[in-house]
Figure 1 (cartoon, helix red, strand yellow):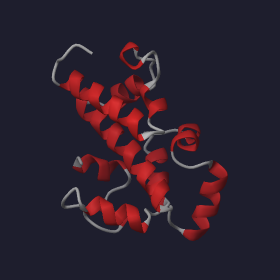
Figure 2 (spheres, helix red, strand yellow):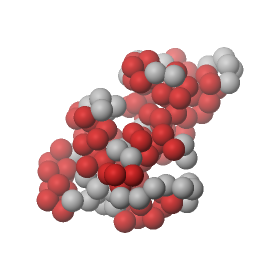
Figure 3 (cartoon, rainbow, N blue to C red):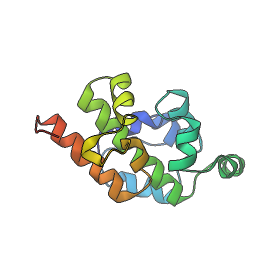
Figure 4 (cartoon, rainbow, N blue to C red):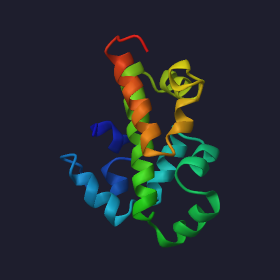
Amino acid sequence: MAPRTLDIIGGPAVVGKRVKAPVDWISLVRRGLPVRAVQAMVEAGRITAAELDALVIPRKTLANRRKMGTLTPDQSDKLVRVARVIAAAEDTFGDKQKAGAWLRRPTAALAGERPISLLDTDEGSRQVETLLGRINHGIAA
């Protein structure tokens, strides 16, 4: 997993540790990421509150999780998945704004769906990541 994924969710200061290898994500997710990771993504403009609500955690549930300080492992897994795809899009397009625009624009290669709307499932995320890989390697999407 790209080191940029960690940056997108707020870096080591937010998650409480450095991610030195992809396997490090497993313990972070299982433990539950801090709610601040959600806030970091929203404050950085990488995801809107409405997108967060649909893809990761409903707002009402988020309010309850704030009291606890951490997300559940399932919510953490969803957040990391979304962050990973956003990082891949930013790497592919070389720019946060261009990546954000692409993620929110319907794409013929994804049956007219907006890529970000597919990130609520593992399979949808894989399809978006595959398309980003094709774009990154200059293969017709």
